[in-house]
Image (cartoon, rainbow, N blue to C red; front, side, top):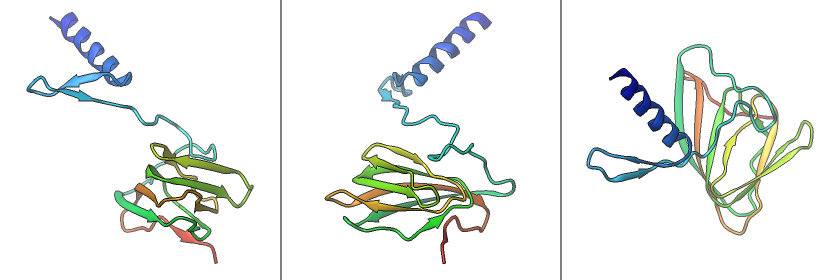
Length: 143
């Protein structure tokens, strides 16, 4: 019985890891599509979580065509899923840039000054997830 259970668990895990189909309780297929699996930020830093009282904040951003966000940095991890548009993010400390398009997942740099520009013809729509120490803000603007 244990071998059967172990085999079933391994098969289920393999299905989820490869983006295969799972089944809900009624037998209806549920498609699981992995979007990202990383251990570092966009600038190559290891991802580190807040040390105490972690709070998850979820927001949406709508950035108009041609808009450039002010230079800023994040003291805690920030993740973003690009729902629509094309966004160029530039690390102003070293000049390196990354361009993200619809369907991309961004793991933002931590503690490094950067800015983002909508370089597409339509709005950029982001689903943003922050992990902060409870009550903290995750964006600091450069003065």
